[in-house]
Image 1 (cartoon, helix red, strand yellow):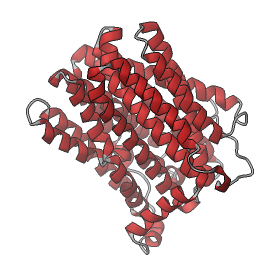
Image 2 (spheres, rainbow, N blue to C red; image 1 turned 30 degrees about the vertical axis):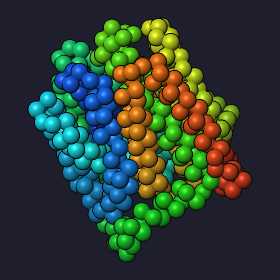
Image 3 (tube, helix red, strand yellow; image 1 turned 90 degrees about the horizontal axis):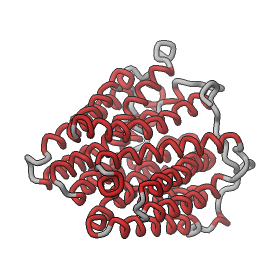
Length: 407
């Protein structure tokens, strides 16, 4: 099976699914803003489809680990997620907003399938020495999707309308279905995992996240940082409208963040041992705080600089978080820890968007200033868990694998 299912097929599916996922958030915000004319409802819609990931992510991760044919389960999750996006779009302006929000919350339960659900399958495709390079290529699909998704959302919304942007995101997710369906089986692993209960599997991963101080403080700081990032997302439509001359142009700001994040990680890859990943996590939070404060100035030039600085904070922070997780997580719980950690971050992002939605209609600079304060809090949260009990490692520095031929 491994011979017939190549890494290229996996990466193609991951790029399609993750680009559709990254596009769906801005597209839904723009569609909600266009139909309802309210930044509050637009931000609540985004919050609805992301906040339920806290429940869906860990459960989906365990089910994928226990499934004999994880690709079939993953494909089913993609179908339901795409269908949910279509139902949200159909309900905007036609159904009561509360009903549309409920659909968004249910759809969001399956969101982690588009990110962590793919990565959990990678070790069965690239064995031994091939895995580090495959991991690096897989990580690049996140950066590529973060770059392409918002740009596509803004471009399609400007050219064809916000509703069309949602349709394109659904189409991208659908393109990933064959790659998901054909993923290799693992019957031996299923016989092992079915000797334990679903609840005990979930509890084991949670105990590691809470019990290992280095992992706990990295998780806490990254989640609070995601609250600030969610607040920035809620400000994007009005930033585009008031500063750049169009709400759809605001989504392009997110692509600027992705570009600078990718560039920052490329530089960091050249000096992987310069700074420990634990340090990068809290320093990056302060960089994001400075960027959010700059964005509140209101000048187009300063706004572009601000989002570029935000990417310099976000990119290395994510890479450092992955380094800490790999260093601290036991092998048999690695997938659950990654999925649970990702779900917590998504939930933090959703809470930030929900809080900033009402505030941004009252004061856009005020919402950005509050977001900057939350980013500062993320840096302080890193030290809320004492470092004395953190698990040490022989090499505590950040190691970023540089794939051959990709730069």
